[in-house]
Length: 87
Length: 279
Image 1 (cartoon, rainbow over the protein chains, first blue to last red):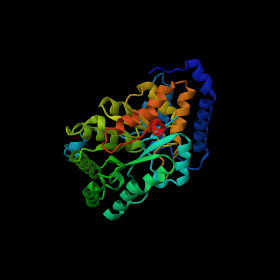
Image 2 (image 1 turned 90 degrees about the vertical axis):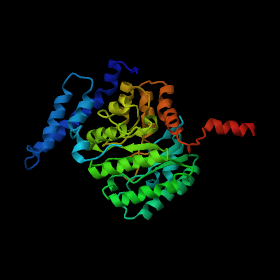
Image 3 (image 1 turned 135 degrees about the vertical axis):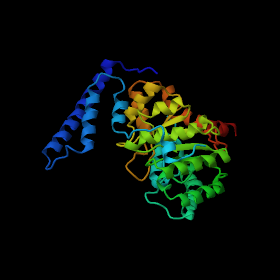
């Protein structure tokens, strides 16, 4: 399906919102750094950094790729492993 | 614009919400059975819940001109109690002839366990036996991708099912393609933090088109917004999408899907008006 707004219109409409969301992310990472203690070994932090990398890649499916970063893997043999018989 | 919210838990909402929904253009809702926020202990607890869904809510909705439909099941969170789940599944046929019951739902997975899968399959048996439509809950957050793929494996492995009569709900960017490619209907839930925003739902429509896609609020007792569908309508308009496309997603698609259920006797506002004029 076509997208009625062109790129310039999307940017004009969303620039301030995108800017605000990036600032929120930056501030949240700063907050983590300033806080007492160290969570650098927490796997969730690694996933956050991995997701940030996805954002900087020139693709059109960043949202899907970020979702997959935060997803448990799918094993197509699960029915055999769990002994669940299909109908 | 008239719209139909295909997934909302009105038992958890106050009557004022019905009034607000009506003012926003909502003409019909479908309410799947779900988790009450605590695990119920007996089959009679579910029997009472199903009476609420089939007797109380339709009356409450009708006061505001909203037509109320529902779906019955024991949800995935309570499926770890396999013996209770089987008791509930055995009791559900008592309610399948009620005039507002559309089918079996929202069945699905929560933590993607063996017990959840077994009870999911037993719900499919029930739906097949009584020729019922199916509404499916897909898991939250990190469990969604894995759980959705598992659900699709179970559905596509079942030759008894008509895929056009199955709605897989709560799809997001990483699951919507899998659901649509297998020929099922897909629902996008507009939740503030944990699911789709209206903006991302519009993006998905722009990427996949309006075919077999719906949006819903899934308003319940948790953080949720029962008027999320009008938010989606507004975002689509702000992006200059035609009214015909918006109407298809929020009104015609739900009606097309639900009309496959024998119990769905929805009357459009225009049709009711025409009847009054003739009389």
